[in-house]
Length: 391
Image 1 (cartoon, rainbow, N blue to C red):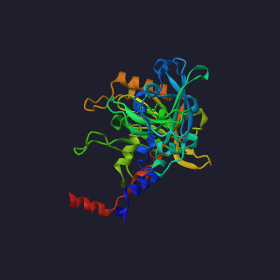
Image 2: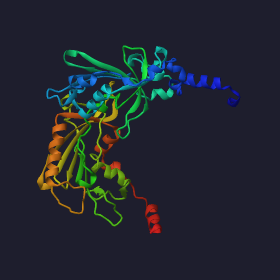
Image 3: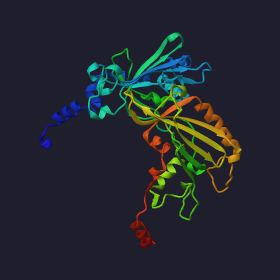
Image 4: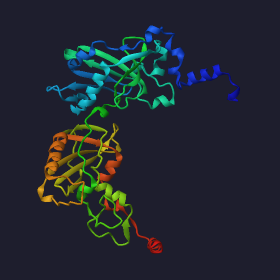
């Protein structure tokens, strides 16, 4: 039936649904040819980038501030206990805003701002289901000393991302001006404050681990050691409980066992706080010792939501030390660090993590709090028969 609809009706439906409505010709409001001449969005701002003392960022879901440290090299986020911010990301966005060039005008009518995602963040309303999953408008204010404003821009829809040094294209608007623009530049305007924080904790590949253990608050302990290698084993080591398995039981998933030893392979976090703000006296303790001398102790406690209910995540602390007594050199293991590199890793990681607690996702909590029973299943006689037939 749609085939019988006129082209005009099709375009009308597309506009109502918001699918590509912000690219249609009508949104240009019949701008003159002169309006299409590329020009700096913030003339003279490049000369002032070193004067930027803080960034104020507003999104439909968050409002946060980033401040320059006393040494002018480091940046922190006061709203997250002064945790370090990625200096490179700050630099990229400050320079990116200064370098924005407007290349094509868009609508100057407020009723179109939600389509372009350049509305003031506090008033923004997604136009459809697809838009609900977008970050929405990101307002970035560059502020100098004594709270003196330097520049501000609302970054909306992304037309194209920067690739291999080539600028991307974005829908943008100055908050005190009506006209929206397509601008080109190099931005990475992240809407989630956590994405601005330094995310490096410590990376300990499973293949470096000699042994791992999980001690519950009641003293129950799961101890794992490297399993003897077989001809079928690929590069990474497998792990097994150090004690014989209960009679009639077997490992249910080698992946789950290995995940305990490899829990610091790609550790990430959803939030951060001062460790002193949480009580770790009844924590579950996960202990990792590596073949190259690194000893990591991870304490974890259940995280609670605003209503005091367990939200399935965990708050953790990570303490790392270097112990030469742990060294077991293995020339065949390419993942092991040299002693100097292992000590450097520990020193740098400790400087980042000491005194901080991290909120980790449910999957990390699960691997940090495993019981032996979580890793076992009944060893059924029919399984052995099937194994013999396969052999």
